[in-house]
Image 1: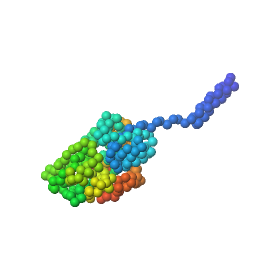
Image 2: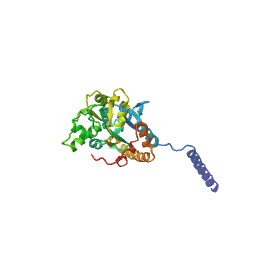
Image 3: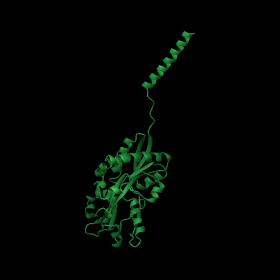
Image 4: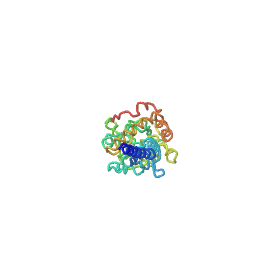
Length: 284
């Protein structure tokens, strides 16, 4: 009987040993990364544009860095018109929209959003030897014709907010559908409109063209934070937290400044008031 019990014990020990051996040689499978569908405007250089079936530009570079850092996620990139980006975000076709999206009350109510992903230098673009403007108030008091702005563009919200705060010096604001920086600035260079409001980085690619050489730019009239926007879901709430944590690291280690200098033609983080403006709570 004792021998029988000993043999049983050896058998059980052997089975346990084989189990340990199998576990040691065949580790547990890691869970697959969650796929996040990302969309960006296809005509917003140098922020976003199509590149190798994905997204190029400042936000393409930032997205790829986040994809590398956040191993629990895999970003599936695509580009389309700006209107289609928002339609897809509202229908949850896209989880994440990347570009230089600025704050607006409606956007922050409709979508989830990250902390700041970059800092834009806002300028006024006029025709050389034409009428000049160095502030939004100049546009109003000089009765300058402002180039129409897409109604789903945050620049439209900037002018709306200014008009609300300055009822005695309102700017004549006209809405329009999708329009590239090149098209809008061409209208200023030909004299159809007196002034356009654009981030400096959007103006620069046009500056060296035949039409662009007819233009002049004001000094900075303000800094705007940009954000990623996400469709509302429990999954994306977790994604926002993960992105925000990594964005904090990328700002601290200089990565955001590095790609800003590479893609946006200047270091916006070195401009006056940049330290207090970046990630400041929106006041509008």
